[in-house]
Amino acid sequence: MEQSQQVIIERQHGDESELEIATQLVHAGERLPPLSGRPVATPIYTTTTYTYDTMAEVDEVFAGERPGYAYSRFGNPTVSALEAAMQTLEKGVGACAYGSGMAAIHAALLACDLVPGATVLAAQDLYGTTTNLLHTVFGKLGVQTVLADFSDAKQLESIAREVRPRVLIAETISNPLLKVCDIEACAEVTHGVGAQLIIDNTFASPYLCRPLEH
Image 1 (spheres, one colour):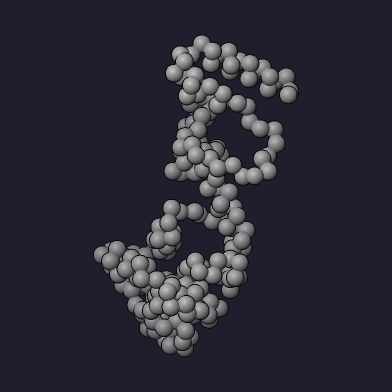
Image 2: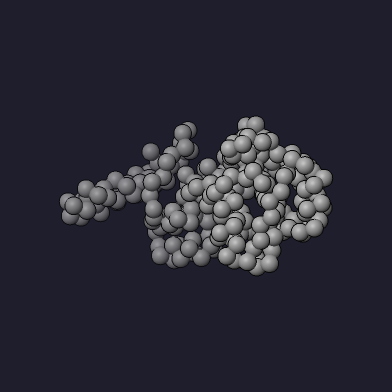
């Protein structure tokens, strides 16, 4: 062990020995110096909060002025590892992990700037909960949803040119009917009307299909 690490550990142990036994039982041994190497197996971080040497550092992290973790609702090393893995597997430029698939779909739709009066063109065999989200939640926000057969590219293009959707949404393999989407054809239609395309890749996974490659 390097001398600097020895000093830190000895100093911490000295501080801990002066604490009450109840505090020692909860916190003793947890303020170790950073590892000099990376763990081979990715750790699972169960903590909600993180410590820093000064409050100024905490403020900078919360303000986004320096990299780091402050509260697991905003970021967690385990979640970051998952996001990095999905980015690699899906061949993307970034990834965001959510607590559920529907939360991810909701966030993706919100990211498409669905203002009142906007239209979503959705596959008619789309997952029922996604369709319900579009009709109930986004419907109350003034967003219209039009259902179409995404397996018929010509009909899809005709409907898209008529309703001028802001977003098209489908699944690689529909749930539960297992219809396979022609992502390349959907992408051509989407680009033709200047819209954005959301593909739910749940059933296929990046092992079988990577929609971003289309």
